Length: 562
Image (tube, rainbow, N blue to C red; front, side, top):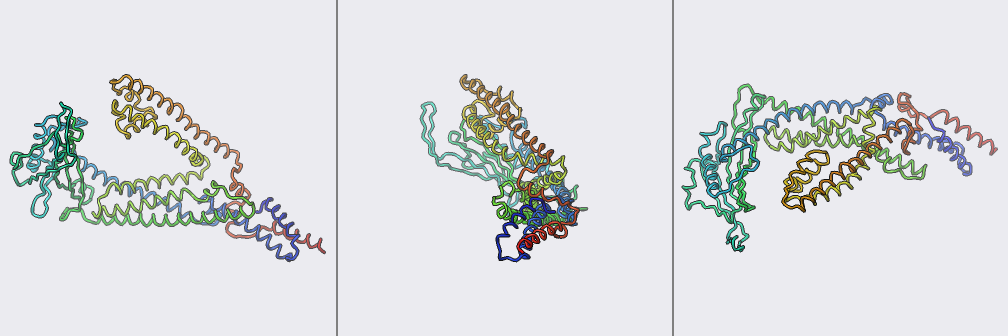
């Protein structure tokens, strides 16, 4: 149905046609009717584009394939993520427990409750190194796991003991004089498990240069098999644990910190035989992953096509506004044609496809990058579930959340940028001034975490009380610093942030209650009152009333000329 404004526009344009004498009446009539029909067709196309799947089904009988595909995709992706999470959980558990085992076996007098494991005497350094070498040699007799040495060719991989130190140094703290060569030198020794393992057997004797020592590193490789996967009908994996024990003396403070790190490589076992478990489960899982990849490719194609259709429709609408209204379409109206939910689904499909490919390669033992696979699958599943909110937005009462977030987003970003500058200034100041007196301000990362916790009302008392009262000036400054930060961010900036969201919410709510269009695009669509089940979206037929109006106008003009 054409609107009154379209009739007036047609009337004005037709009056202008009266002055153009050479064209025939039939041509003028045809051009005017065709122009109005194109405008109404564009309006219907735009309105159809913004319909929900149910309305599109009533309008053209188009079944909501994308909706059904998204529902199926959510189900199968969630199942895939759950199975991968359970498998990844076993890998993480096996890796972490082996790390604890290595600390208990190779670190002398290790205590799990101690935050920092360190030694302070020279003889303790030799004793701890001797203890590590001794435990490595008698691994078979002490471990309760299935740990073994790595075999490289026909020989075992040895334990490597490396000392890193400055090449030359003459240091006299009493006289406040020193001379040092900044060149670093590394000396290494190797100990094979088939030979007697002891520092006393080394020629020349092993000597630690404590005054110029930087670090001592003990490195060895152990192998193990994760047998807990058998009860879940999965084939076990073979693990290579590269254990690195570091005696850190970079600070040269008389305290040598000892740290044990564990680098894990997962390999496919060469020769295996497990009764009751076959490779069928692996093939079925890989087939399921391939189905997910095909589903995501289909979803990606459909959503990309919808985005391209929206961009083409936006170009037609811009041409209409430029031709009939002599004005440019605002950016906010242009962005309405770019469906952000489709962009979110496209990103989630890409991440799920990449994650599924990595998962297949992990199952076939081509790769062992569990971290990268979990990031892609986890983020892709998160975006898929967030996309469900789009369909909740078709209900008027639930749509208020989406509209509020979308309307408030530009103001929130501007507000965060301004508040972030103030936040960074407090971070740098706290790191430099309070860092030497409080562990929570020792690094920029811990400063940011501490201040963010203060904003959310967490850990406030300890942040105040952990300040060491060594300098009265710094102690007073810390009080001013913390009080001003809490007052500024908790009482002012957070309140303003909530106010921005609240004002946007009430504005959107009033607009929904009034029902008046607020943008040029909404006004353009409000003039199309054709219902989805009216049938005009199926057949592109002209309105008889407009045709009668055009014929009457042409007949009147002909009578005046005769």
